[in-house]
Length: 256
DNA sequence: ATGGTTGTAAAACAA
Image (cartoon, rainbow, N blue to C red; front, side):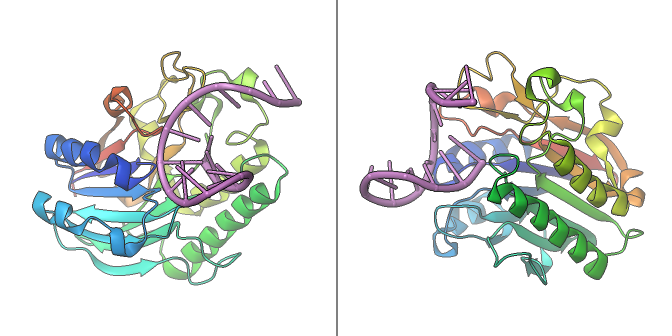
């Protein structure tokens, strides 16, 4: 089974690219973030035509997540049981082929020390509570999505330049480490030991051309599923298209 | 330390 995660930064704008990309790669499960669509506007017919089932949790203008699969999606839950603050639509989970698929769009946090940074930390706390209450670390669980955190220095283009700033600050790294130590492994990192492999480049300053990137989109799995993971990779190609998302897809293949 | 760009939506705000 191949699973992909992609922050499309507006599904309305990116649908033609996503549709073509799915046709080319036919991943079995696709987790999307930043769909920026109310549920009424979710492009059901286009995914029907592609032969995918879907579950989505969207809102106007901001956020929004979705799970697509080429097989049935069951046991869907939208949002957490309890959240630090009233729900922005950033989390959806479901079961596909007996795997628990958790799709997260972790808040960006804007600036270290800001109210939004505090919200980011609290949101991750709510995710931890949710895992404690709803999941078992000995089950086959995938947590993927846009984490908005580069977990190690090799996940950024120039650590000395960005140290302490948003997505790399120590406090948020420690916070996301509480999620990892709950019971996850970073399957991309298991299969790719080197640096310079990124999933996001700022739209500004020719960041992509200069490879000024960050690895902030992740696929983490529990131990038993990590043992089933035979490869994981990033597809940079969509970032080269006209009018790209600022993120690219990350994928993982499981024998499961 | 700002500013650069994109998306949404109609002036800022989020990223």
